[in-house]
Length: 103
Ligand SMILES: [Zn+2]
Image (cartoon, rainbow, N blue to C red):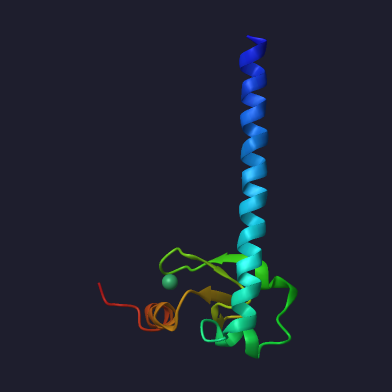
């Protein structure tokens, strides 16, 4: 009984360690790719003044994808800012809101 509990705790700790290590490795490679090539994310290198909300995830209302608020495609409508994964989704959203299809 107690042994099973200990095993469970050990597994949980192991998982936490693995997650931490994976996170560190990912951060390491992210740093490397940022230094070596800006090809992948031209907006990230261009925007030196990326706001604090850059890491904030917001939902694309069109396809439901979560995107980073700092790097997403944005549009403002009626005072509200919407974030999209791509210009295609933004256009779809704008088109849908503007010209409501006749039923
Ligand atoms: Zn989308």
